[in-house]
Image (cartoon, rainbow, N blue to C red):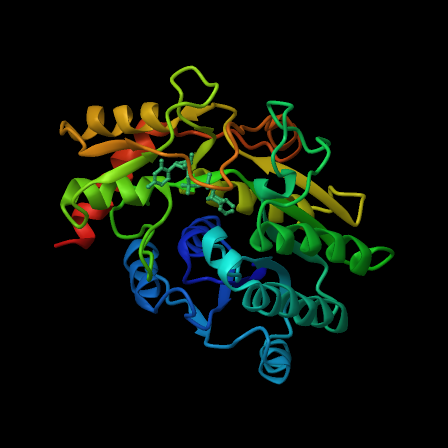
Length: 338
Ligand code: WQD
């Protein structure tokens, strides 16, 4: 049974991926210092899978503590690296925090990967590496534009460091470029639990619907789109978790020849903000209290993925759409608000 080290294992996508890895027969350990999470997801993972996941409360910027994890676990077959800060707005407010946490942490992890000869590495990347692109849908060879935020820049730098560091090494690496992750586990026991105030659309919708917020604002309905609101590619977190398991299997099965490669993880459907809200109202049976407001700085008008490379190489096909996202997110919001 291969042992996989998941960094950021108590985070939103990390915790869902731990469940999928366990259910696929992998042994797992986690590193997470709870900078943007807590230990609760570990209890949920135990409830869902019956397995205790050992989490090392270690900051990836603490080199000595990180090396100790690798000295204690000499049988790691692969690493899936989620641990990073990911708020676009926060990164604009404090770029140096983002460079230290996301880039220095990655450098330390790369050094451990090479020193302890870990042969398989999955990097949590993002569609923000494309910046404000005109060509849609986006493919992996769509040229990158200037990153829209320090957060996006840490993902661009991260991919380039991994490509250079693993070149001519024994390590094979895949960068998975997420579009808009959303939704919750079908068990209602795991979901997005932002430690700080939610900023992303789907948790803002469910917090408004349950009454944690009086209302929400649609950031602009005067864009050049079919209904004037921005278009995104919302991907269910369970589809994302499945893609990570398939990607690590792809590497473990020695199917990748290059040292570094990238895959888009979106479902290829562009959904507008107003369409997402309509989907919520349909699955929840309740009207949402929102107002049409002005545009949010930094928003791209539209972005959605071509995921055919993941479909053909990783044998990955997304199973869920925006209504499943809203349905699971709404049930999770109700469960966690009890
Ligand atoms: C989606 C749409 C908003 C809140 C971010 C990161 C990206 C990735 C996914 C990690 C936009 C609109 C939102 C609200 C609104 N994260 N909106 N009212 O900005 O597309 O992407 O999350 O990889 O890196 O940038 O996500 O959910 O904030 O916004 O109208 O209260 O919803 O304007 O059009 P975004 P989002």
